[in-house]
Length: 327
Image 1 (cartoon, rainbow, N blue to C red):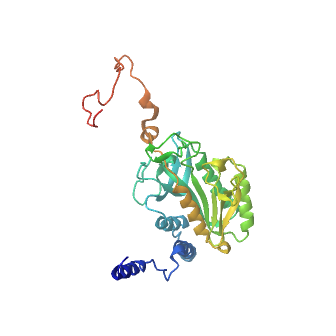
Image 2: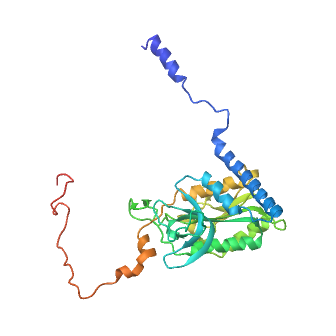
Image 3: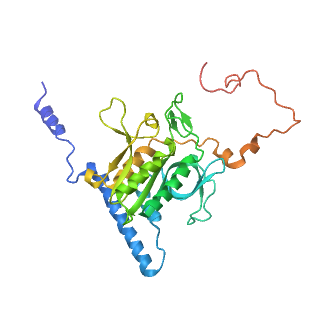
């Protein structure tokens, strides 16, 4: 039987329980998204007012959005802007927001100065692309869709879902995709002549004309709502968010919305969808320096030189300097 001191000690350690925070911490990130959304609206309005009052251009809304987004995303994702191109020499043009991996991938064309906008990123290095609009109407929606669809139509070698880091795969490749490109349109506000329903209807109808991997995945209008794609898995009771990497590539899709009426801000919906997507993306930097550098010129053979003959057998042990342990 435990003595009284052990019983007292047990009671003491049993009292060491996590306490409920006076703040609602399990929703703190959602509250942060709401705060940043309001901040974006205020900063945008202030820049417009400054421009109208002082005849200056002010800070563009896409620069404001990049600044705030870089604070929200994990530091492994570089939030930048610039041109996105592929190894065939095609380009989608200048993009407002590009989420890239600068740890594994070099820039094809680096900035001339730290403040310069122009740089070129290979599409293989890109997690996602966003177009940012001050005011959204059907014309600016079409313009943003065109830019993002061009990004989706660049040649982007597909990565198997079995690749678990940028330079290693774990098992045989599957039919699941490991690097679908994320894309979104972000608007500070809608045009006063446009309704959310009209803009969403056009967004859906334009996407309906595209191949599945060319579709723009998200439409976010700050203060109004965020709209993305969902589907109904066979046998599931509840719908799921479309990931564009597995069975939903051939399934019927429907629109999912995140609005204040549904308990989440527009920016919160965008961040949830974007992080859920890019956290599962593993890129492949193999041969980037070849495809964007010397290219096929490395493959040309110098004639009339004596070749090195094939070696019958090679192993590290046969080579005589193996230190990997006993055979």
